[in-house]
Length: 452
Image (cartoon, rainbow, N blue to C red):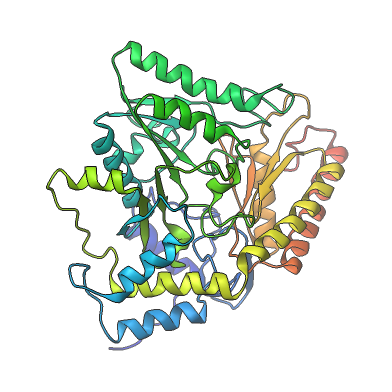
């Protein structure tokens, strides 16, 4: 077979536009980057230019990590088959994962993607509770399957709308949300919103199967729920006969630094009934998992209907999963996330004092959001400025993106090997661009949108 001839970026773009669905969007669609190689926290284009990757949380321990590549290659040479055969990798991996979780989360199902994991979590909850309804947070995104679009306000509001069995609670955002940092008890206030939803549902003879939540809402704007919120919500949900599902697909595996799982930020007394995992679990390999209790698993099995996933838990996937856990431990990436994340937060907060466009800096470990605003009093989102900033950063070979309902929150979710020098480089470059934007506005005597 002859090697394919190198193609220019424009040739690849033209071919993509001809063959790939137009709803499959590119980063920087007006001037997309063609990436041909990556290593660690760096990506390289067809001309060998190096970009700092600040957003690729899928390459959790670093792009093309040699230990992960080796684990996949060695197992591929021996065997790759489905999980109906006995194999040590499957049970070894489940055992290793169990050691990172609270004791009651001791039964595992392996799948190929976060969407599959969340779909299974929904099925488990409904089978166990015999209820149908689901409570989710506003702006949530839980996956691209039909069942998950139905519980993702981020998506369904632009499609067929909200189903009668879906209930939407406000995001526990103490910067921009319903109850802010000056509220006397925002934790109880936000939890009471869920309680009220349950009461209204019961009046309509609806029964709650689950409260389904990202442990740290990402699409919602890199939100850090106040500690104690999950505990209070879980009390209301359990009283209603429902279960608590923690979606860790964006933020698990030590990203928050202080803990291995983001839900643990809520406190030692909080344990979800179901936890879903994806993205970082396989460092780019298609792998996902659902962890739950024996009681829920037994209720699911009681239907007599087999659960089977052709590729879920295959020997290669499990070898990769084990290697990811090994690297996290060997390279002390959890402690690294704390150290570098704290340093990055410090630098960003210094910029917040210097640049009025930065309304809030929030995060934990290497999960950080920078909320850009038009004015300090109203906290009006500044999406045009955010878009301009990430475009300028791309020109300086830094890959960053935006999120949040207003598309104004800069999201930092880099590979866990992102380091102090990377943090300084990003923030120094941001400082220069923001300074240029402010000078441009003053010179033109326009609003903060003038430089965009």
